Image: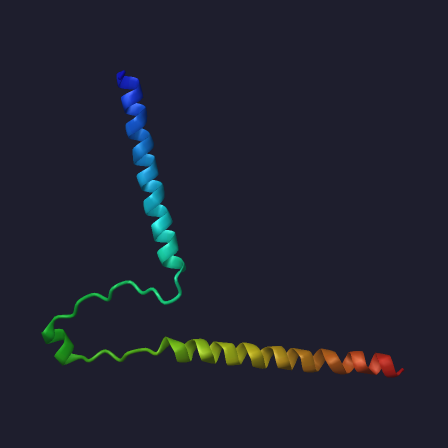
Length: 88
């Protein structure tokens, strides 16, 4: 094999490896329940200040409820004006 074809093959294999790594990274980021590993806390830090655990499910639920209330409020402001036009 010529040096040129060897160099081309190495560049192609490197490009495929980088593309595969990128694809795995994107797929892992797209998984909703995937969380990166939490950093390890030493025993001394853990005993001195216990960290409160956040419940992300309630945050998402609150956001959904807020969004639903906003939709209902906006619909209630739009619908009466449409009903008045029909009755006139």
